[in-house]
Image 1 (spheres, helix red, strand yellow):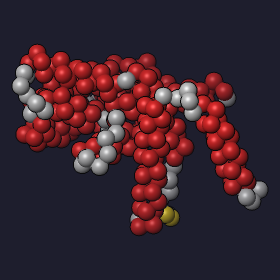
Image 2 (cartoon, helix red, strand yellow; image 1 turned 120 degrees about the vertical axis):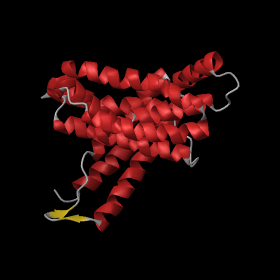
Image 3 (spheres, rainbow, N blue to C red; image 1 turned 90 degrees about the vertical axis):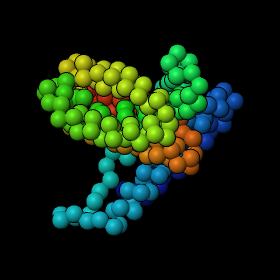
Length: 241
């Protein structure tokens, strides 16, 4: 039906507007902020992908955008989950604890620890590499990542201090957990799900870059659950259908 998309769009705006009006006093500011950060990142990615569609072409037609809805829901719902757990605050506290215990007087310790932890943990190579290591015993992607992270850690540490070295602990826990869990979640890790997880991770890498450029402070740590939302979406679809 021609025009159905616009009708659906209008109805959803009305429903959303009414729902938002009803809960506006019951939704804490930090949750509103993380939702807007998730939406802003989604809009940024959609805009960039649209521009690339106009610039690049492949042999069998133009580049196409996929998984847009999944990306938006992953970022919004994952952001809400991360905000509930307050991952970013826990990373800050962990960094402060390390600083107090091992590097008293190192002013940039916590910043270096948190920034490096997020850079080294978020991204397609962390996810896909850990999955391949756990499922196939193939660690080639993680070896390549090790080289890149090693070079990056030198640059980060020269600017942010020894806190960068301590980011090895979150890397060990994060990637190790994915590797160990790979066997249990293997039935749900289709190529599509892994691609969607990598997409969410790549969006968070953009957010880290914005933080480093001091364009805007985005609580990337609280958005980390977005990476794993595609697995949940897949499970829900399995239950429904």
